[in-house]
Length: 288
Image (cartoon, rainbow, N blue to C red; front, side):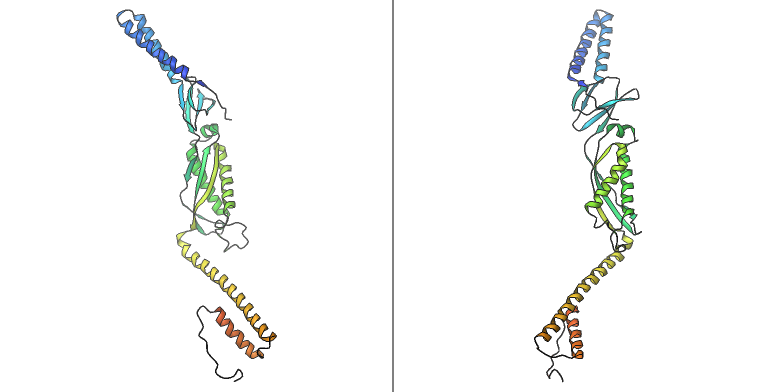
């Protein structure tokens, strides 16, 4: 598990390093003409100064250092500033900042087997530095590969739309926030082993593949036309029924079944036709 360390401030160690470095210069200059002992002291001060300098580390905001001692995990430093640690520790830098992953456009088959193109945008960051450093080889590559696998699994789990599956509760095109929520959960399950936190995941591109895009567009247009025609016919039938009832209720004109059928036919042509109808005036009587 991740362990948070609170190392000592590095300013005192920095001052000691500077003092030792100055002392090394002094002893070296003095020992050139006087004694070999001064030269030895100068070398010792210089080596100790370098040893202390190795223990100094600067951690920038939203960064961390994972510390190891001869292969053993010691802890993680997440505070910012200048610190002093055991010079024998080895450290690994890990950024804690949020990062964007613009996934490449993938060509996969949806639940109905139709080839589609899909791409996502993912916002993620490292939450557990121990897992990111030791449980996977390279956590950034792990995020890319597992994100692609999650997107493919999502695309194959739902149809693009409900044209072929009328009973589909969720579709990729109309799922909206629910699809994004499912994608976030899928990514969280896959990336939690690397200590990655998914902050947001959204579908950035969704379309039929080029080889079927034209046919699917025609199918969608046909479906829209049928739906529009159905509404027009329903409205026309209602208007014809209303017209016949009004004529009968107000005794405007008496029509037999044949005349009613002709009137219904004419009204349906007028109301359902795509173009304006040219009227034909009857100059005689109604019964001629």
